[in-house]
Length: 292
Image 1 (cartoon, one colour):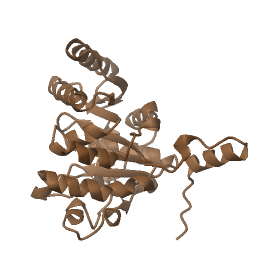
Image 2: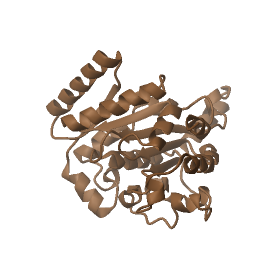
Image 3: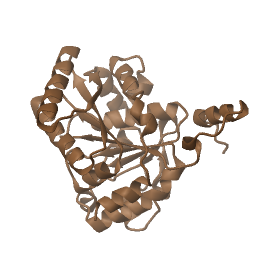
Image 4: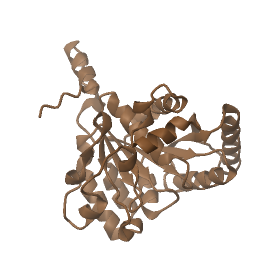
């Protein structure tokens, strides 16, 4: 079947060439931009943010791959209304390639599911992570943007990704426990990757006052003890539209695009560093080296 999805990035490149402009270096076929999405603790709404981010970027004409690396406890497929036949477990046991595990979802976004209820995936060995990284590496050249949705906390796989990436979206709530765990993840990210660019999203907040108060506490603590702090990307209000979208198994940005949460998520999707989230070499090559 003919793919009729409009690739705006290619259109912009063609326009520059027709107007006599030289090709930009970044327009040469290279690996995808990679953005990691992580949180210090569960319950922050990280996967909802990651799945909506992927759909919003795909809606712009980008080729987007969402990788649910909450292996063994994955839920991105549920949030996108998908029922993948294959997941990371099948990639590990050789039943299918990483490309064969990809399914298409809303707005043309592509997903690789981390699988559900697989103990081996919840606690993968270094060798198993190396296998997954090697399997994922060829896909980098097939997409404009790869979004990696991590499990909460500081698992071995999350730290390896943080060591490799240039760009991290750190998701927290305004509660002190969520802020404390987010700070721990932020600190660890800079320990393994001094050049990482981190944007903070305060999610599921009752109002702006609490959101900005949480940001000020996080910023002050980070600067006091680390000498630097992340960038505030924005805040997303607690909104019943999100609960309804989860029950409907459809992203809120599609089913209720004018809701407060959907408008806030759309602003997160416009965060500038996403446009330049590339590394100097293949992302999963770097992640593999971080395991050694």
